[in-house]
Image 1 (cartoon, helix red, strand yellow):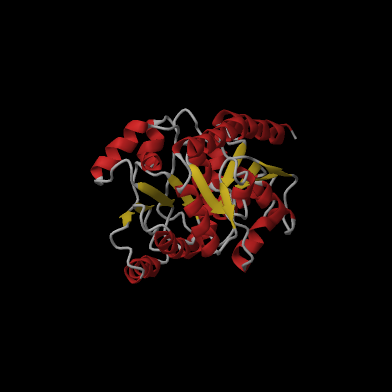
Image 2 (image 1 turned 90 degrees about the vertical axis):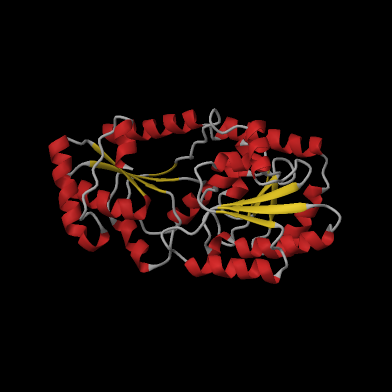
Length: 330
């Protein structure tokens, strides 16, 4: 990671003892770094980032922005972090704004900072579809459903498998395959992966499911599939997979909660279903498999247009730069 930053000309520091178990020494290190480098503004990301950056900024009397991507947790650990002072608290969706506004927080202002999608990088690539389909021996006429993201219970991969099994029974004559892209992360809920494998076997889906661990070619696998499902049982704070899938002109189906409901206009630029309802998800997928190519393409183009008009990376950067300038001038 350090080499990646250094390669971009960004100075990066990663001391070995910079961790939660050594919080005060870590904050002390940051305070010294602020003084040495004459830092005028700290940008903290996520609650743990604000725990370190917010305290160091407060002690050093330095301006700070906390960009909380969420989620807003009700537990004690995250509950106390918003009480650390900050000049501006940024959140990534209207959903997050409502959640954060309802809590106690110690910020001079609260603003929505939309995440940006680089549509010049993320766009449909037919060549990638062809390459990956040949790699997995999947012909172009086979309908592929993709589920992207790390394997944890709140992402609802088990719910999707139940819906997928029902879909197969509803439409036995059509060859449908699903692919999971993403494995467990940092060893979190490693037993969930085992549970999913057992569920695949018990639902007799072993020949219909492809499992891919973490890959650097996520964008290519967006091209590989015909529809993307985001089956989270808990509200997504934004829905990065949803937004990227829309930029790839894919039909995206997502739980009707949190950030995704701000991204998708049901039936126009994608589809929404009641969180946790595998019957509704199966029925929606059946409907999508019966759409002709032109209808799916129209939904995909509408989805990409929405992302270009509302979540283009350059607009996000401009908004963030404005926050920097406003906080520094206060």
